[in-house]
Length: 211
Image (cartoon, rainbow, N blue to C red; front, side, top):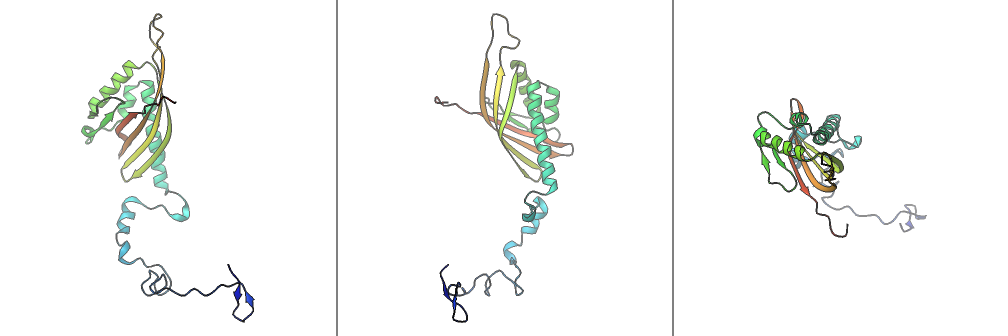
């Protein structure tokens, strides 16, 4: 900041006075009310409805409200249970995590390289095929992101997959260990029984020749 003359004519550190801009923050057309408080007017008339439905993250708290934090924790646990059940080949646990009830006909699943599977019954049957043909399956989840809006949660992540095809094979066929990655979206719905998996879409990531 450049030096200039102070109010009494002596040298000071105050620069030239900046003129007020008509209609600025403190002008007649600005958002400040007569007492200096913020008055959003009609521009924010619908925010109350948004706040009531989705909630607000108070800036002074630096994070989501307790209910959203609890939801994220519950969704994280449901997502981890889904992969743990798949690793164990436990169809009962898989059946418990997938959505049932009025929306079960809209359940969807896309396995890497497969056509989409629709409906809870067919989705569970597809997982039975996967488990029967994969003696060993392990997931390492990375890049996990969770977004919650009302009764819907979207979990995006990368599946780092290891399969051991030697398990259960004959002595003459030692099998092999394979690895791969899939970029995945899991969508959960909030139900009276907790968060349930509604849609699962996994797309294989093609490794480049340089990797």
